[in-house]
Amino acid sequence: MRYELLVQPKEPGTPWDPANFDKLLHDRGAFANPDGTRTWRLKAGDVQVRLLIEGGKPIATELRVELSDKLELIRELVVEGVAVAAQADARLVDPQLSKTLIANDEGLVADQYLRTAQYAGQYAGVSSAVLASYGSPEQDSGMKPGTKVLLAIVGFFVAMYLLVEKLV
Image (cartoon, rainbow, N blue to C red):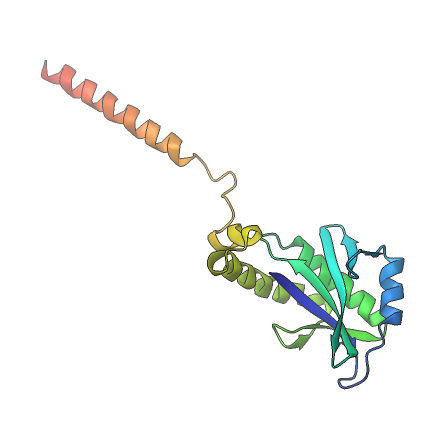
């Protein structure tokens, strides 16, 4: 499963001509894949780019990101996508939120992305999103559970030893 954002004409209902947007992506390092899609390499990861066609006509360019528990890529995609779309005289839309995005919407999109990843990991079995559904592993939150159990066992035996010494 993937999370998709769409680049569409500024005016709804206007025909989509992807040439200007494609040129801007190419200038930013996007490259073609053998299957006809393109890959746009951002600092946080890769974004799959493909033309969305309905009724034989292009209606948008789709930007697709793999679901995971990491939010850096989707945040970067929103910021970069809005900038490139503005240069192409287009708009970036999040269909899940039914909203045209601005650069400040990265947190809103990241929240929806995480909810989608949690669902995909928990109910759809998407392996890259499993950590999102159960929370990421705790980082440096004190002792590990195994260490706590070991200390409890040692404490129990010390208490037993002291009790036996007192009784003898």
